[in-house]
Amino acid sequence: MSATMPDDRSFHVLDGVAARLDVSPAHPRRRWSAQAKAHLVEETLKPGANVSAIARAAGIAPAQLFGWRRKAVKDGIVQRDPGEAVLGFVDVTPEYSGGIEIVVADVVIRAGANVSLETLTRAVRAVRSA
Image (cartoon, rainbow, N blue to C red; front, side, top):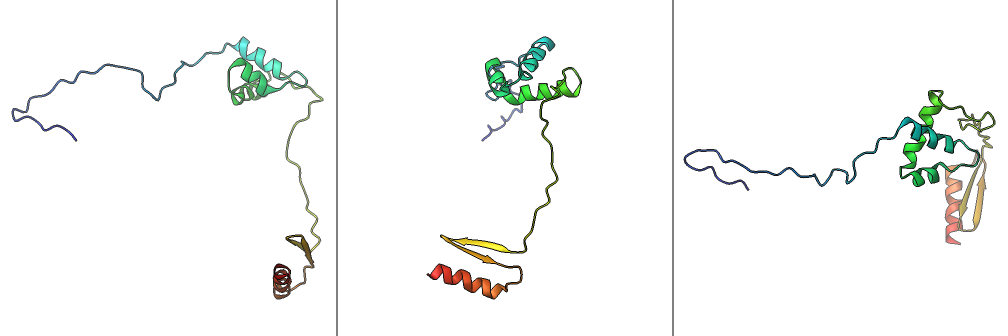
């Protein structure tokens, strides 16, 4: 609730002291030199390197180191090992047999594509009541 304005309509001087906000980070941001980044990225490119472990040892988030690595490879600063597997999307064509398999408790109900809904419903109800 705010204070009422005095009758003489004079202004009030508020004294304030600048302080660190509670939501600001406790530590200032670190600035990483290009050499330090390159050294860490080179470590991640060694065979069998664990990027998350390297990041934790350096005191940074693994996502930060992955980002530096991705940028270094994209910019051509470092080269990937030619034998290194690259992840990507693969086209998958599912094989559809035209049937359905329903597991109720320890009973498996297999039905073809031409089974009616009523027949399938009766089979599931019979298994549940057994």
